[in-house]
Structure formats: C-alpha cells, structure tokens
Amino acid sequence: MRKELDTSILKWKNRPINYVVGRNRIIFETMPNTDLWSRTLFGIVKNDAHSLTFRIEQNFTFSCKVNYHFKEKFDQAGMVIYANDDNWFKLCVEYIDEQHSLLSTVVTYHGYSDASTHSIGSAVETMWFRVTHYYENIIVENSFDGIHYKQMRVFHMKFRGDKFEVGMFAASPKDSSFDVTFEEMIVEDCIIKEDSFEY
Image (cartoon, rainbow, N blue to C red; front, side):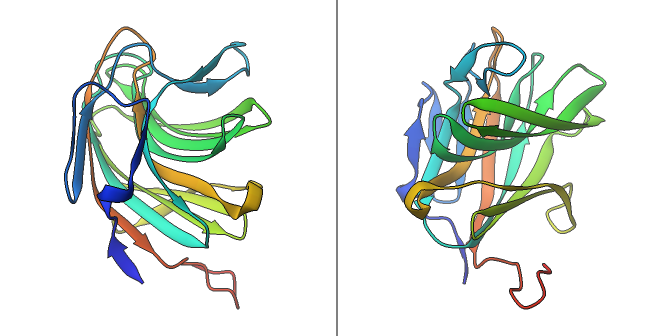
C-alpha cells in the first residue's frame, strides 16, 4: 500500500488563523509565541504549536515535503507524533540565524523533552521527512531531494492501546510568524522488512 494522505481526515491542534487545506497541499501561517517543548532546561511547558494529525494504529511509513520561509530565531516546521501531552515526538528544521539552522529531533517522555540537533545551512528552505513506526519503535529520517534519506534517530515509545496521532506541525516561539507548505504527503506500508530488519 502506498497512497496520498487523505487530508479530510486530519484534525487541527491549535488551529492558526490563516490556513488552506487542499487535497494534496496544506499551507498556513504560524502565529507568534507558539512552541512545542516540555520542561527540560527551560522549565516551561509549551504545547501550542500548530499541528494537523491523523490517528493510526498499525505499523506504517509516512513522509512529506516541507517548504518554509523562516523569519525569526527558533521558527520551526516538520512532523510530529502524539501519544498524549507528556509523551510526543517532533522532527523539524529550526531556524537559528542567516547562516545556519538545525535539523532537530525531540523525544518527550513522561513530560521531559530530549533534543538532538545537527546544523545545516539556512539557505535550505525545503526538506523531506519520513517517519516509520514498527511495533512501538520509531525511525525518523530526512532528505534534501525526497529520494535519498538519512537516518536522524531511532527510539521506542509506548502508546496506550497502540493508538497515536502523526502529522505535520509548525511553530514560532518568538514574536514572529512565517508561511509553511506541506505536500507530497504519502502513507505506505512499513518499509522495515521483518525478516532482516532492513529498510
């Protein structure tokens, strides 16, 4: 199975004011002072990033293309997995300055966020992300061309009743906003081969 995501099944969490949800493209403008982070280092809980997610219960692979035009430090856009407010994951590009941005993965477990980052040039304004779920194990990857993917992180996350939500998100933690576009949203069978654990 490999198919385009049916955007009619998506549900907003913290819906922005300006947005368009099309059949195969989602565009919206972030609102200021929005973020997705929990406790670690800063002691704050922010769960007001804009996200569009769908519920899924089986092993799968989900990928999408993200186009963004960041304006202020910490502006971010990418993909998200929600189990609940204390257990979630995000992978994204996060803007730092005119020279560099961060490829970031954040695993939040029992209310505390654990971040891992890798620097890239800020001239990059398009990124593909891919998430694979395999029996409560998550593999996340990024690609600069939508063809060649590189692994960013592997982790385990327990989901109550094997139910969770996955989708796209963006946020502007400072007093700014930016436009983001999500397209090429593809849901397919889990790409991990059970007999070899290769993908």
